[in-house]
Length: 575
Image (cartoon, rainbow, N blue to C red; front, side, top):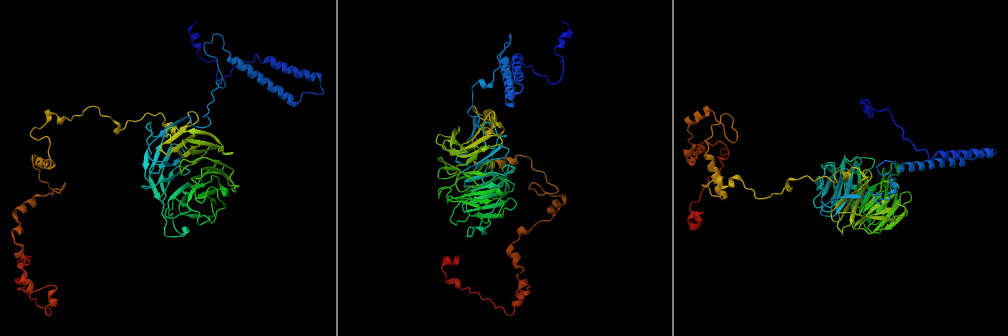
């Protein structure tokens, strides 16, 4: 074999996409038989040709037989093939039950000490924000985190105030923070303070007449059609609509019909557009009011009386992706599904115990399931009848901890779950999830300055006897050190005269000042100040210049009693 024959093996014989060879040896007879049968039927009965359904059945049978023969041909190894035979994935029989939910893996972030009461996830899915009952807000940037899972930034909106709600706007540029303080705070995506919204006048009885809330906030939500309009719900019984450009006063005030309805514990915008968009607000009296999202705000378009038990706190309202259905989590341990087109009665009701008063809900991206926080797990409910499909255990939380906040991000397909013990877990799938927690999962922890461990004894060079000064004692008092430092300055050469402008606390001099100072002597310190003043006494009496001439003729002459001191005791005379 020559050199050209060896090179010809590596030279392509053609270009373009090559067609794969198909095994047709096992299909030729079947196709010919089907064709012969059809031709024979036509020849036998020319008046009754085969129908369309019969022809279609014959056409479907041939590819099926071809596919079967092809799979058998591909599955059978050729002679001399040392590799294993090819198999289909369906033959393995391994059905992963977690494929429907992104819960195959998880990371745990334990930085909170108290119960996590608020969660917010930016639209990109790379930044998660959590707040607790101890007034701390931690920002978790997954792209900048490592395997230690430490927050990238910590905020304290109001010292000692519980963080009740956190929300990102539509574009993710601003973070809205609602606490038990009447004032809402606005931050940018980096955690920098932007503005603070005004507190109202607590001495005004009509809540429509004051520019701001007078009691603590419970919830907040952004308008899905705007980046600078949001609504806040407060314990003063009102829902106020604000604009980021006007933090000194709200734009609109929403007050329910009933005066004794109590605090508004939850409010949420629907995701729809146009006249069908609403604002849902739940109050302590158990009612739910639906307001038009674009106004007018004089009265609600619908009010659901006794939606939950009176006197309980409805902790969350969540709208489905279709914008027509919404779910509520009541303080009476119930989850109810509603339809804004028929809000008179709930579509479905489920009884599920709550582990905390701030338990939240989360719809799946498709809107077919609802995730609800439950004791020690996350319950998945079917939106058809709110039946419990399964309980997902959350790794990292304590045995007695309950899940308070749940979020299912539709873009990264990950679930965040916060617990009463302060732990925060992010559940994700190795195959279905993208970005988010997968950016920092498995990263190696960076060594920090305070994590360096010192092994052995560190000796400074001047502590050794070779470099020690025996003239000075080993231990000196503070006063002795100061005197030694002052004395040490005299060992150096005296400073040179400073010419020109002074600097460093020293006053500059020149030659002329030095010569005049040596010629002209300052004798003021040798002169008695009393004698210097008395030499002007005669001149002041004979020729007064200021006030005395105006009263010279009418001024009485003072007469002093010099004998009064003779009658006083010796001690008082001294005084």
